[in-house]
Length: 209
Image 1 (cartoon, rainbow, N blue to C red):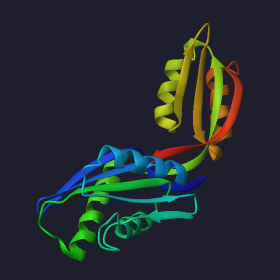
Image 2 (tube, rainbow, N blue to C red):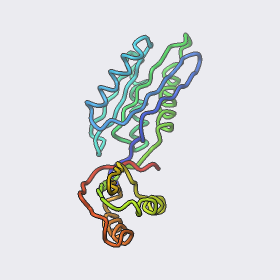
Image 3 (cartoon, helix red, strand yellow):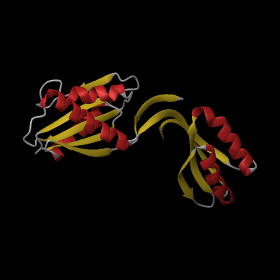
Image 4 (cartoon, rainbow, N blue to C red):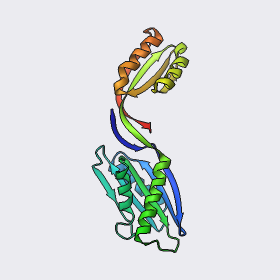
């Protein structure tokens, strides 16, 4: 089940205009607390910068939104980044754009375009993904089935993770909730009913668009 759109992971992108250097940092953040921690870490790393402009959106319904111009003229930096995030329909992410002033003023419109462009570069580099409700199925099975299972996973678009090798193989199979019964049936057919489902739990998973 589709929950929301976000970014796949951390990304950094740089944009230079009129000798001003803009470094955009984008990261997933599921809560405002995570987002604020990320902002403080980047600000500490780039404390010599002219400005560190942050914005974040959190919550499946985009209910937590915040931005700051960090000394830039009001409405020229943080708000354009926030508008970009919401216009893309993204949530659970934070973006901070670091600026090193190059001595040439860009004007209010130029500033807004520069911050927006830098943020967009970071989003594109991180990659937009869909977060969907998924299920993690923990199976124990004989070594003889592992290679074939890995081939099937590529065709049927489910993920195999956390493989453990003992006298048997243990592995997690991750798929969308709606496909749970299909994957369970597939494992039964593959192993002739010998694969053992030892546990299962619901999780949120990212699927790259």
